[in-house]
Image (cartoon, rainbow, N blue to C red):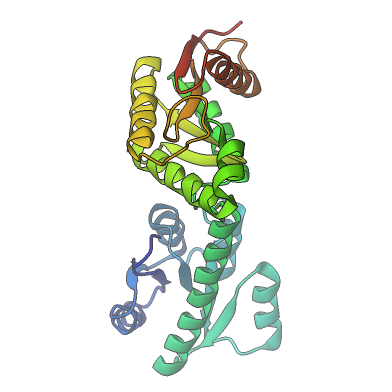
Amino acid sequence: MTFGEMQKVLVADDDAINRMVLGELLKPEYTVVLAKNGAQTLERAARHAPDLILLDVMMPDMDGYETLRQLRADPQTAHIAVIFISGLDRPEDEANGLRMGVADYIAKPFNSTVVMARVALHLQVVRQRRMLERLAHVDGLTELANRRRFDEVYEAEWLRASRSKRPLSLALLDIDGFKLYNDHYGHPAGDRALRAVARTASNGMRRPADLAARYGGEELVLLMPDTDAAHAQQVVQSICDDIARLEIEHVTSTVAPVLTVSVGGATLTDHAGETASARFEAADAHLYQAKQAGRNRVIWRKASAV
């Protein structure tokens, strides 16, 4: 779910009238998906990824308890909050659902005010949880992905590239003479400069699968799945040029009168015998070469496995 997008509620009930009433009640506030049995609930939960499921307990073929058990057993749907809709009023029935991980109960016949209040409450919890998850993956200064998030995405993309035999490009970007910049202009100015560089790098990563992250200090990492060496180097060189065009004054630089960056990159093309850490180390080695060669440049190597 992106900012401003309506949250999604899946209503699962074998009674057509209940589905219609709940759907009409919720539609002004939420995107509503309907299901009439347990099998449909599982399929639509996996396909639509709702934020909340209103699940009837008493359904034919597969009741709410079994549907909930299968939802929790599938990693794709295990996290989705579920509210049981039930005419059962025995404490042991409610306790059973709570033990299985249901978030709440709404009793039949349901009251529209109670339904809306409980749905709103649990969807607020969902929003807050996702906000915390997002903050856990974001660098506070640059607002790029942080190192933890990069490590997660890199591992996943590495495995995907290894299976598909598609290229995976990686670049490490370091601001030239950043300690000198901080010493001369002060750390608040250094923070502003780092944010400007991060914003420029992020803007240069145009595809949804591309990732710009802060790896540490003044070092950024750029990950470009399904991108060959030639195209990746073009993207990175364009980012470097855009950073120079910011014309952030750097009078103490030994490279240029404005802030510049050095980049080392590597592209995985031959997957046999390769590891994710080895490819990262190759990019880091090329960054070192870029610094040793005078900085303000990109050094890239098309990577072959050893």
